[in-house]
Amino acid sequence: MKLQRRKRADPEAKGKNTDGRPSCGLESEEVAMTADPAFWRNLRVDFEGLKGQKFSLLWSSNPQPPLEGHEEAPGDSQWSWWHYPNASLLARFVALAIRGARGLGHDSEDDWYDQLRASHFVRFKKTGVTQDTDPEKPDVRRIDDVGRIDDVVRESITLCHQLEAGLKDRDVKPARRKRRAPINGIVVRTGPKPDYETAKRVAAAVEQVAPHGDWRSKWAEIAEALDKEEIPCPSTWTKKSKGVDRCTGWADQLEKSLVVKAIDYRLKQAARAK
Image (cartoon, rainbow, N blue to C red; front, side, top):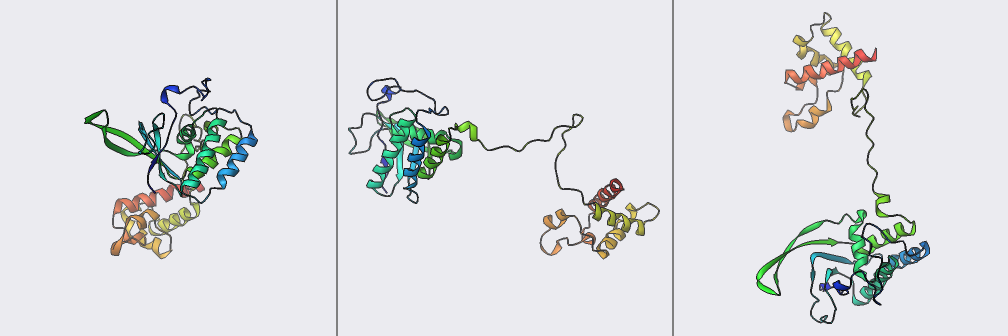
């Protein structure tokens, strides 16, 4: 589909409606609740009638002049159509976008797209830059930031849901995981629950091989005993080791320090379980 640039009202008239009256002049993150829930519900249903159709928009940091054939447009726009099904469905979508913009207290469909761009659920990001010649200064290369909204219909439906519920964008940001309160000034980190049963089995094997407590010097014998009892070795060993030398048991680990550390950790767990 040929890229089609959006028309927009004269930038100098921003802040006024088409009849010259001052508009709401709200920033994008402060949604104007000028329409009732029924308005947004009806608009949402109309947007849902376009589900399954691909509408994508491109955004540029600098307003662009109208495309050829649209020179009558009174001003430039930061938005361009990247993809749309056909001219008829595009006209239908534009009419809905204008209704949404007016419900927010604005008078241009671009204001609807701006509201989408500012909404957290769209996760709008700049995707790159473009270089073009400045029409007023042919010898100067202009660099613009660009971004895209891939599914404008879906995002419009979500925005209508929020407005119907009377929510502002900041009211529905994803919840963050709560951090545990510090104990005696120390933040307790969450992790896997200790496997006390396995720890007790390791302690029993160590007691059998080294009953007098000098178990570190007999680490290799203890490793074989742990394998004989089919006690699983640390999972990190099997994940880090690949190929023919992959660790499948305690005796496969040839690094003494790793074996001693793993046994010592489980002995401490067993002691706490008593």
